[in-house]
Length: 213
Ligand code: AMP
Image 1 (cartoon, helix red, strand yellow):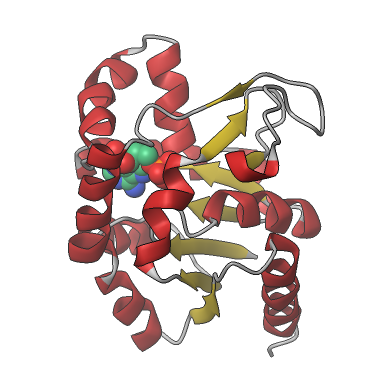
Image 2 (image 1 turned 180 degrees about the vertical axis):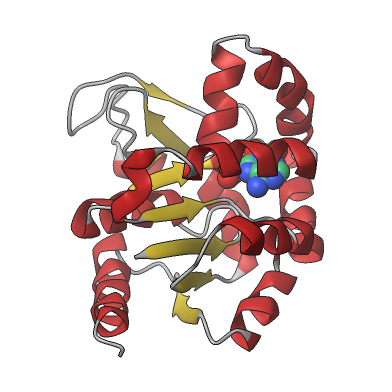
């Protein structure tokens, strides 16, 4: 099963992606994570991507599409993958159509007035990748699950978040229509309900998808 995860920044894609990938044995491919890793390692791709991430803008399409195409050519994706953060616009979606066969698109809708607070309070574990909100941590500086160090993403600040939301509304939101017309969209509401509740809804829809003729 090859899936795409769509949703505004802060809609809870990262948390759901980890759960979905684990449940269905899919390879989780996050273009944001790939760029952040390249930036950490000082690679040519990282050096190019850094200024775009810092401003909350999209890394150029040709570079991004090439990275995903190469990643999907690796043998470990044979049993399925989950694309998280790709495609981000219609150009990337059209490119993806030329080298991938997608079975479903999970779209997490969210009230955007909730997002700023949600994103700016986000903390991620360096070790296991678990994502928290500061309000859940009671001042803890380490991951309650594995003890790893928690960090705040550099682009999780009010200015960059505003730019990321603009990019989402102008460039990424049209993909909902694009995949609805292809009959691939699965819509969910990412409210303040616990992540487990949303995951149960997604799981039930994906189990149905697997049974389609
Ligand atoms: P994310 O972790 O998905 O929120 O992505 C963080 C940042 O990485 C974005 O704000 C972009 O600068 C960059 N990025 C991630 N995915 C893409 C993509 N598909 N196309 C272009 N830029 C991307």
